[in-house]
Image 1 (tube, rainbow, N blue to C red):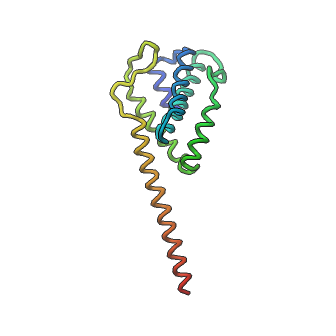
Image 2 (image 1 turned 30 degrees about the vertical axis):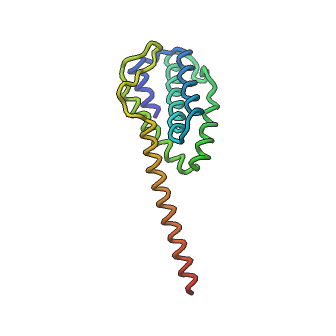
Image 3 (image 1 turned 90 degrees about the horizontal axis):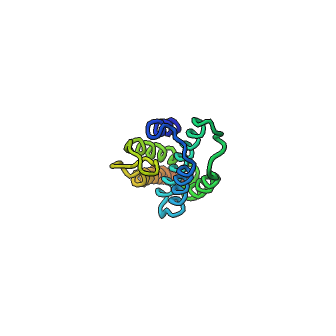
Length: 165
């Protein structure tokens, strides 16, 4: 994901650093997480926080500032991860976070090269990342359920076979 964030910021804003804009973008994503109604919305917001944070770090580095001096506290991302791990389970979270990162990066790559009055990249006509993440989660739940059902079926068959003997 870092390479995609690098390319996005290189092309869109040439690594221009604006502390207030960075704080605003990050805070917007944090609020989206806490206002989210679905797991897909929360997963999208978490990935967006990571995307903004990586972009901020790249801009800091490019402008000769310490990448450890983020203009916001990123500990909230660990809370977000914990919430999602509780919702999805660790295995499913580990799989879906990488897929969600790809979705968000693909959608962000399609953003216009036009910036709004605050210097933020405008979206234009791009796929909705949250909807794509929602579909991906449905697919991953279906795969997980199929594996669990197959495992349960094998256990029932083994129990039935053992009961016959």
